[in-house]
Image (cartoon, rainbow, N blue to C red; front, side, top):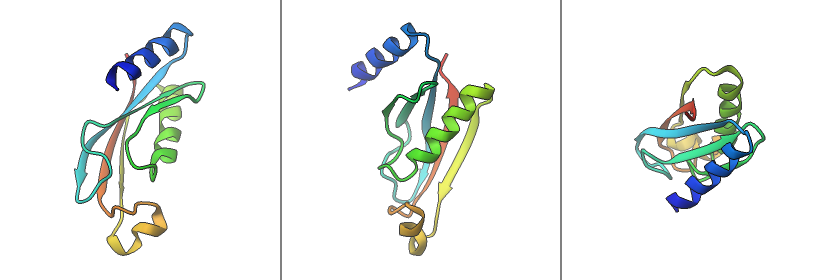
Length: 104
């Protein structure tokens, strides 16, 4: 699977795309992905990988686009109490910290 991501990133870079990488740096409680999980996003909107079961991908995608535009890395925090988890889209109820930066 890693080789697939590396091949995809090489292809994007060869086309002149800039790539942001979002990395799960911390999880507390239940989380669909563990620390080290990655999502790669290009300036053109292509994606590979995952930082959650889909519950925060949209927000992370938007943050990746902002980081690509500004060049400024960001640390994102997502989490809710278990009783409100479904409403916020975090069915796991845990807390996730995601670091977003421009690749390279």
